[in-house]
Amino acid sequence: GQQVMQIPQYQHVQEGEDFTTYCNSSTTLSNIQWYKQRPGGHPVFLIQLVKSGEVKKQKRLTFQFGEAKKNSSLHITATQTTDVGTYFCAGPRDSSGSARQLTFGSGTQLTVLP
Amino acid sequence: NAGVTQTPKFRVLKTGQSMTLLCAQDMNHEYMYWYRQDPGMGLRLIHYSVGEGTTAKGEVPDGYNVSRLKKQNFLLGLESAAPSQTSVYFCASSGLAGAGELFFGEGSRLTVL
Image 1: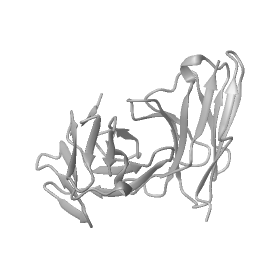
Image 2 (image 1 turned 90 degrees about the vertical axis):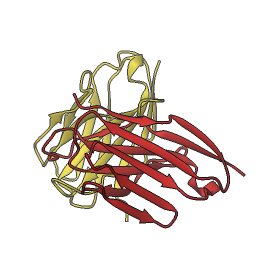
Image 3 (image 1 turned 180 degrees about the horizontal axis):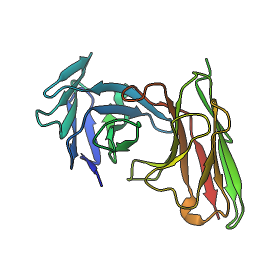
Image 4 (image 1 turned 30 degrees about the horizontal axis):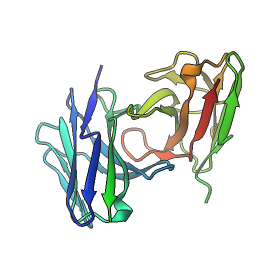
């Protein structure tokens, strides 16, 4: 079945440094979503990418969807302590992208050192 | 402004006991899901529902049952709890069939001794 791999599993950065997490799927994705989970909290939706090669920005966060729609990345510029948490990518489990079954990556746990 | 509410938030069970987790959403969403989260393994889909009266299996359905008798509620049952079911359980809902975000509840931490 479809697998969504995410690297790295852990990342420690000094406040102000940049951070990137990568997501790779074994199959082509119709779309990809990103979520953030604060320590002790629940996942919160950040963004959805649909188009091949799409790039979206949210303030210091930049999201990319690969040309082949099999990989994606999240880049945070100049990290802040408020960025601490685990970042998950998620893609539809079936090729049609319908039925809303999402397969989540294992997540990247970001620690920001002040 | 409740969104998705899960009860209970914490529960300790002995092996072999049964219990039910309740998820309620007030957003009139059609789709509801139960995930479990274990360290280093992300979120894995247990069961889901695409509407009132329907349920379907996800990635890891064994040992769990679900029911969606009312649109706003999605129940997850453990008939005979096992230590391997110790986990954090998240309920989520979404309103769109082919796109759109998942709204998660705050989670239910279950420990099976």
